[in-house]
Image 1 (cartoon, one colour):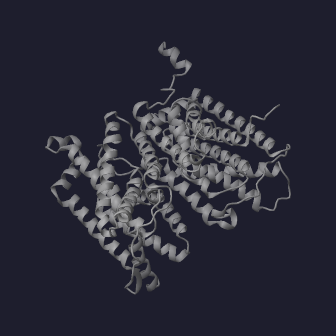
Image 2: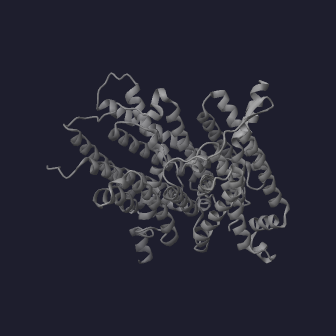
Image 3: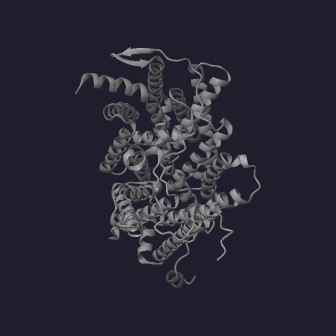
Length: 292
Length: 316
């Protein structure tokens, strides 16, 4: 294989698709704990982009200042949806399929509702033009490079938090066996709210990165949702490491195919097909997902 | 017959209602009875529409309508059915997550191919040149007749769905949706049944796509968004996933309410119709899904009625 092509695929793939890894980690956390395919997670991503754009353009703040507040606001919306919809649904013993349909309804509601708040036109971040920096001989914008570093740091922090901290242990315990976790003194509500919040923050920050890289539109998160879902299902929600590897691999593969085929949609098509075949070959999903 | 009351807007609104009802009826068998969460309705519908359109326009036909139309329409239906067979095979033994991914992925794949294969489909610009397979005079007369044909087709689908409900096959679909491992342990060929149902439903969706393509006479990739799948799911859920008439009642209460009553008869400012009303429509549909599933999970018509035989046995 051409070394130049390989370098370009890796560098551009990491730079372009770093937010995918972050979004997939957030989605995987939620999926692992709740067993729920939350379609409305795509709007958490979208809202993160909108919140960041609003803070950036309204208060003239630079992108890295608005990144954390945008994530926090998206996290609060995520928790809000849990209390408003998914917690009552759990109490009413709504089935798994119905929950997916409800989350689909929520996704549609938020996607269109945000247009009444932020307006109909496509919006943009007000950021200075980035400078180009050479990485392994491949030109990457300074801005994208910072995005990769930020996503890597955030992903590692989340990974450490879930796999190493005492709260992370509680989350994993709750996902494995809610009754046993409760008997061990873990407060399910606190942990559940925390996980919805963290997932929302991760999704919101990913959205802000997506938004600043191109534009902010209602379909921003939805356009990424299938890839996020596939990365999580193929990477395996059991171990965040698998999700990170699948996310990074997906980004590089997408870029390689785009460079080779000259059309980004062909890359999407091949990846979607490949991932669905992997799911078919692997069979049913892993058993370890909670029901909170 | 005096058809002055039937203006172009009303024909279009009624056509949408009939078409979404047809899709929701087919979805009723998949999602309502067998509990296969097909989120790729628009994919099968779009595949039928584009297969028909591409064959009709791009092939150098030596025969005229209606045979040209019938061959292309049959091809659209068969291709959608074969796609249903393939997707069904991929997802039949996966759980809800896998089904969601598989069907959504398929719809995305159809959108991508319709966009990228510009030489065949016209891509994002679209493809014109389609026409009705008959000419009975004015455009309005042709559209009215086409609407009537669609209504007859949807009535046939309704008849088929009602027959399935009362048949052993329908009870097998319900059993499969309730507890697939149990149905399998009792010797039922669950995989084959799901596959057959998925392929047949997909073929029907493809045929409805063909009908739409003819009515529009112009194929656009913007039609391949999630909105159509949403409308079919909302209609089904609001009306009642377990009842034969649920899709019709649900679609009348949702698509009918917005596309005809609100758009035609409410005195709203004209400026609202461009953006506010369509956005509000989708918001209302999303909210309806949440509210109905939370507070009235079986929709307006409620839970399934047992058929006469079962009621007699149980003395109901």
